[in-house]
View 1 (cartoon, rainbow, N blue to C red):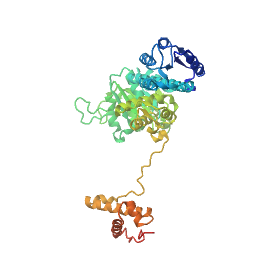
View 2 (view 1 turned 90 degrees about the vertical axis):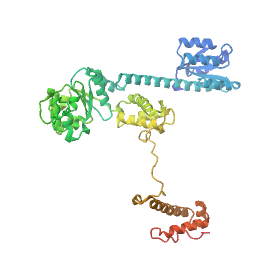
View 3 (view 1 turned 45 degrees about the vertical axis):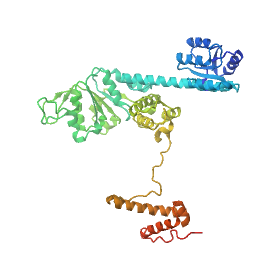
View 4 (view 1 turned 45 degrees about the horizontal axis):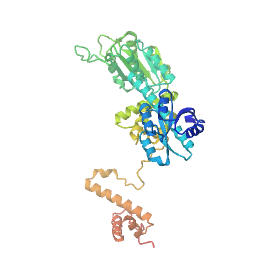
Length: 484
């Protein structure tokens, strides 16, 4: 009864002895309130918090069905367990259809049955309340365009980033891939004075090395009179924000030119020409240790210090497990909407597996796992079987072809259709007859029976297959006369 420990329940029963007996039995596990009829119960519920109601259906002043209807209207989150005699089973079933959580019957050990039903009702209410609170928090984060997190470490990183959003100083975000560095960069941009200006994101690791400088800084060759056609990404972010993802991937020459942009606010395009002014706020990210890159000569020390004026580290998901439920709920809503699936929640066992997984790919891996589960789910809840095997621990089903599968030689596709089909049929017949004969112990009659053919037709088919040479063998001994 731990889940329902000290939850407050209300017993509604017009029989004083029944009411007192139930209260004595249930007070060991619950805080118990009682009401002698429907009006008294409704009056009590109007002023007092209750976690679950145990309601007798057979009451004279106001029927249990009417009380249930009034409770469902005024307190839709409150779970109600109804009590009914054996002659009232139809009414009890109707009550469950009308919204009651469950019913228990009298006189068969009503206290024990009621205690179990109430425990489950209280736990259901608490689970639904937690789910609603989670959805509200996710919805609020989504409306504000904020990073979805409740952990102290991530909240501290978020507060630090938002605290400098109004400044022009560069920001360096450090963290493993998938920890939400770009999301945080976008949050800084939205909260700052440049929110209405462009946010230009570029993955430095995806830029071809030969084109990095032209892409970032632009080029003046054959530029039109307005001078903008040769503009690079830095100019495109003018008066806005430039997000340099994986800045460690920049070649040393590009690092030198980026340092000049950060230090002097000047862009020197390739091909000569006058330097252009730059007013882009730079936010960079890295998933590697830039200090190690500096020590090995692969990253400029002066650029590291210039980028790292404000250094913010984002912790991996395995170090902030309290964020997993929030993120999973967010991804669930997004994926269900995208794929048109009626999946609304994550089952308890699936939620446990999500909490316990190490998430080496961080939030990006979690998003992929939830999308897999939403697509795989057969009901409204995600179950363990819906999760990828890397999370659920269940092995993937083998996708090998069966041992007897016909493997067509590659050259068969070079043949005309009719010839290719004939070759495929020949291969099938050879393998099929060989396996049927083997399973029949080389008994021709038994093999024919297994193949659904009469003995003479099977024998003719066997001779036809053997006449093809069977790759140089004459087929003798592969199953002659009946073994009997």
